[in-house]
Image 1 (cartoon, helix red, strand yellow):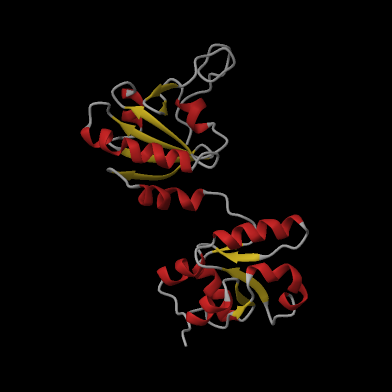
Image 2: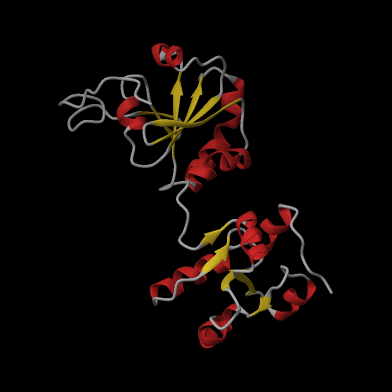
Length: 236
């Protein structure tokens, strides 16, 4: 999505010696003058809240939006754009109400949603555009591979948690034992896919193993994500 012609010479917004994006509250604020440089040409996705300083809804969601921006630092850039200060941009984007959220990725509009969004809704909006860790599998992806018989879920929780509930056809191999039982792990009748309760432990473990030259796959969100998708678990 190319909205403005290039203007990257000295003194242009975002150019060396030129003005930088201003700030409104704790989030960076952009205008139609620097929108191309600060949003479209960004190396990472940019979530823009089109808003009005006088809007009660925009004021109400500001703290949660700022908290979301901190959580997404380095992955997603979050900025605000007051449509009263950028009327031409508002007309070009056909904005009808505030707040309106637009996510720009690689100079294109990735998604747009109207109305106040919670952090959960904002995460759902940006998640498809976030870079995925090597080896990460979503619950539905793992379910399909499991149906094909090419993977074996490996439960890295303690044995008691495995005994209460686990993924179909899963084997138990606690996280603190994996490094000493790699041969056993790779003798399973399929590619091992690690999972835990919520995905954080396996994510860190996979990172650690990758550094030693042992790539592994894991289930994003763990067994909680699996159950959230309505997928079956085995219980005694």
